[in-house]
Length: 273
Image 1 (tube, one colour):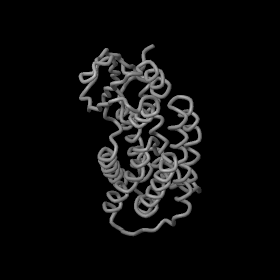
Image 2 (image 1 turned 180 degrees about the horizontal axis):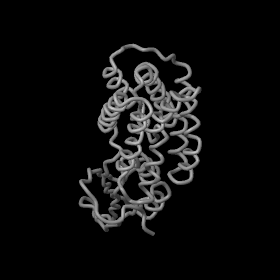
Image 3 (image 1 turned 45 degrees about the vertical axis):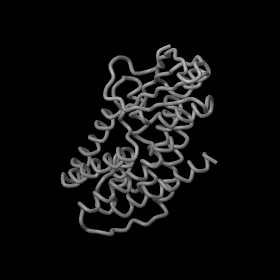
Image 4 (image 1 turned 90 degrees about the vertical axis):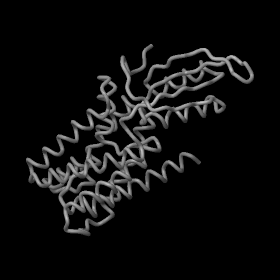
């Protein structure tokens, strides 16, 4: 049932993204973030549609994500991309407004809602999301650094290849999109999970199969029944929060979990054996 709900959310997210692109961003020559923005630029230069380029760009990225990030996350992310491509071809490109600022703002909000809905259910809009995750895991730098750098390249490309007005409005769209996504599902913020469990060995092993993070085990005793327990402390990104919740529910549905925002971390931010 949960998988069906996830697929439904991904379908709705793909429709929303396609609407934002074909009715606002593409007619105004304003570019979205990530691989979608790159696909828009290529479509403006070459005789293929944005949807086709989006699909082609994500094929090698999906292979990279399958190997480096996780099979389920990559599968659902690519499903989101494939559906977005389908709806981009299905929905006609219509200019609802000639005001480039309105198109940039509304297009940014609408496409961000489509992307964030997928993020909230353990997928992504594919493309640069997966590349940024892989780079972050290889270097231990924040995911946000890579999003900024990769999207900055899109803004520069828009300015050089088209005009700097398009680049500036693209910057507005990127800012609006990031704010909306942060409101719905913050990608770059790290959280700390404190998991109180009677099954620490099984839970630790299951978490390490799905999430590449270190775990600190702290002995604990129940205050009410005095039973022996352990607290598993793990720092993760919100990208990984959905996967953690699924693992906990599967292994120990009676575990008590406290999720707190993490202001900052020092040291190695990855799994250590």
